[in-house]
Image (cartoon, rainbow over all chains, first blue to last red; front, side, top):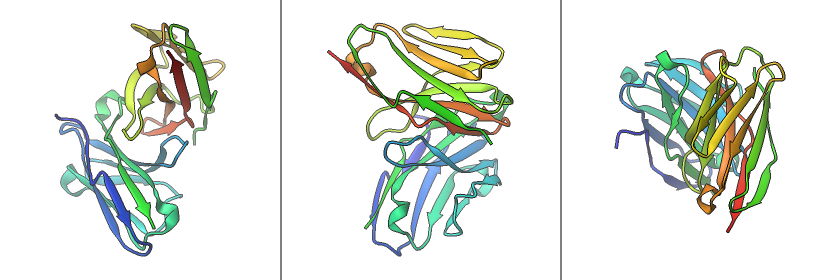
Length: 114
Length: 111
């Protein structure tokens, strides 16, 4: 399967701990997006990369969140000092810039902060 | 930025009936409008899309229409089946690089 892969699929952590999620995009896709989704809502933009460059970061993203995409391949999203309000599904998606669209999502990483 | 509104939030239909979900967007510069289906515990799956130079697109039982003047687009599902039950999201591509999503429609198809 060559789709977008995310892990872990589920993460339960205590408030104040750090967590890291990994995303492996479709191999030929140069754009990678992170979205957050809470129950009953649509995906909310967090940040996106073109190759290894992080081109935009949502103002909703606090300083506790950081994302990287070394060498333009996989990406990681780290949340430091987690809070209960961080509980959500974190979705990764990728696309191939040339076609300006066709965003493909992974299955998501669900975070529960106790 | 872009603002995408979607309605209804829930829709219940009898198997075999049609379902229509509507979205509006705010920025006339948005030029690509995909629709996603999300099943419980899974990521959104692209089911159909339309670009701003096209007014309608059809793929078997699903179709999407776009009215650029009014800035709205709709998803039409005909001959609904129980397996169509899911949450559907519309989205708009803004500035060629960022997608904005509607809040979702939970479709329930009753057998």
